Length: 125
Image (cartoon, rainbow, N blue to C red; front, top):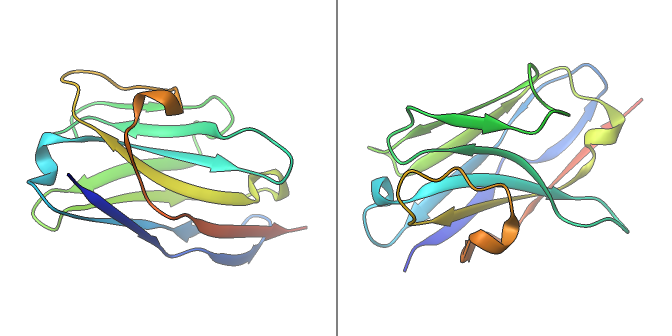
């Protein structure tokens, strides 16, 4: 079983950037695909981005395409979403998640059995 810990959240003004990190422990992280989700107050958890086991394939929500980039360093067991051109509507708790299904970039949170505790991102106008 893999454990996930997010870091890097904080407050930033609109137009700014943040890079979150998701550190994994447990079995070899390179056998897990990873995803990022976010949840704003009063809203359902929504898909942000996903990356394949080897980092060779990615998928993004339309709302972040062109602004966010997801990457991973399997040697460090870490996944990074680089978030640029942040908007107030990006304000949410961001969660890292993982699953072990081969060749699947899942967009539903129900497909991910492993989750971190979340990190707050606040974007002010």
